[in-house]
Image (cartoon, rainbow, N blue to C red):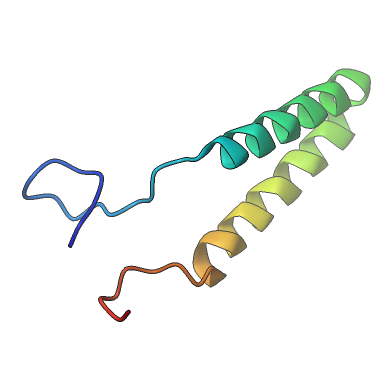
Length: 68
């Protein structure tokens, strides 16, 4: 069963919990501080965070394939 979207849509993303929101906030603060201190370092950390997030989305074992 699909979750999170209006009827007739195929989006099935999980809801964001408090831990995920806290982690994203901490990462955003670190990236913001690094970008303030050194723009090149802030850019590098931003790219690294995006790559890690993309890999997590691909490799996580929390898909909704119907198997239980």
